[in-house]
Amino acid sequence: MILTDRQTDRQTGYPSVDKPWMKYYNQKALSDENPAISIYEWIYTRNRKYEDYVAISYFGNQIRYKELFDEVERAASSFEALGVKKGDIVTLALPNIPENVICIYALNRIGAIANIIDLRCQGNDLIRYYNEVNSLVAVISDIFLDNTLQVLDKTRLSKIVIASPYDRLSTPLKAIMRRKINKAELDSLHALTWKSFISKGSGEVKGIPGKTEETACILHTSGTTGEAKGVMLSNRCFNAMAFQCERDGYTYYPGDKCLNWVPPFLAYNALMAMHLPLSLHMQIEMIPEYKPEKSAKNIMKYKPNHVMAGPADWVSFTNTKGIKDLSYLRSLSSGGDSLRAEEKHKINEILKEHGCMGKILQGYGMTEVGSAASSNLPQVDVDGSVGIPLPLMTFCIWDNEANREMKYDEEGEICIAGPTLMNGYYNKEDESKAVMRIHSDGRVWMHTGDLGRIDTNGCIYLEGRLKRIIIQYNGMKINPYEIEATLLEDTSIENCCVVGVPDIDHGTGAVPKAYVVLKPGLQELADQIEKQLREKCEKNLVERYRPKQIQFIEALPLTANGKVDYRSLEGKDL
Image 1 (cartoon, helix red, strand yellow):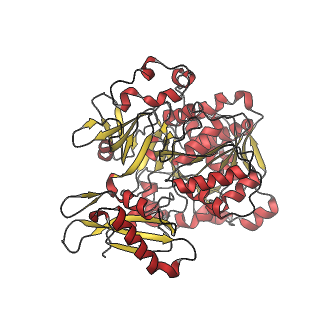
Image 2: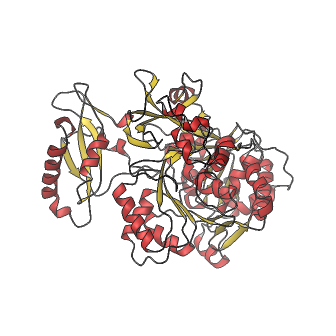
């Protein structure tokens, strides 16, 4: 491996300057340039030599790259026939089906923007998602069509395209499963079936793709830190993610199969499970229904080479019987939320026992930086770490009070710079400026709100979240992650979440409360387990860190994005 002078002369003590993580990358990862083109131009130009390879497989229906490009062109022409033009925003509320992929690239083909939302949204949330971006056209699933119909008169929608996960299935099954909508109903709703929509186009596309810095898609934050916000991700963001992942140390081959089951409204899907494999001439195996408990069975059924999933998907391996040969698996990524080291080792043991040559590698990121910004990699995998920055990204740890960068192993706010940073929150300039700040080096840095540190090898450690910090009546701060780590050492605990609740004794500030999920079959021992948990806290935690109350619950609440919804647990009286 060739190291540059910048890599070998680590002298300043500041991670963002020294970049010690670059020693793990080869010269190609450092020297190549990311092409400045749109996301559609990117996958089109990269796959000219692979037109006969399968791009998407959906329940046995295979779409080759040439066919995918033809379908994108037809859909782009059809969007133009509906009046969609450059800069317009079309809302997509679809499951993980080929039509979702086709729409994203078709809109990009004419310089329009895909606003990708959770297809289960309803009521005021759905009204806001449509109206805040002034969507006149939406492509929605027939499964949740009624959600839109109930609020249609409160939106600006003038045309609805209805796509079904059953459209590409065999005719008998399609007839049984899909929602039947007659022509009169379609006409009254100004709606089109997908087949009718595609027939609207002339075949000739007049618009041109967007520029590299222009927004390609709008995805949405989980809402765990307030109202969900629309995150504008550019063409550059998507392409830079694919560009650097191609150079991160994994082994990819044209024709490899990538399993795609992550909900399509997540950045993790759009960038990592859709755009990345298509950029690398791979085949996406699409599964429309997200069920973590079926992850092991789906992997054995489809036999992918690469899997991008979340902690819940991987944990299901420990509860799955009859696991067979897994030798086809080469890369296994975990993102979206943290996977405990104990669970990770247990799952990796199961994978190894069944012939898998790879192991689960955990990363870190957020929608605002295009999903992943760091990852453990085949060449560097450190327990407790969320990896090193990806090749084009830079991390620093920031002291907000002193307004300066911190040195190695000092704890502060994690900040990220690089080409995958969002263009900002849609129509929220103040909120954008609050998190996208220019530092003294002149660069724009994303302030993540997460606490962490960076060691001398460039490995990043997540230590908590600033907005989860519990502040006592006397101003003392408590990091709930430290309490959770202590509780999770007990083998009877499945999961837990510690939050701040009002301090009734002092009338101000907050005290820690632990919500605990016991492992199956232990509920009757709750009183005994609570006693041993309190003894453990008294032994290992200073007094202010000991939970004021421990409450056992069946499961932790989750956001639509699958993360623990700690906000719903906060603010409850003891």
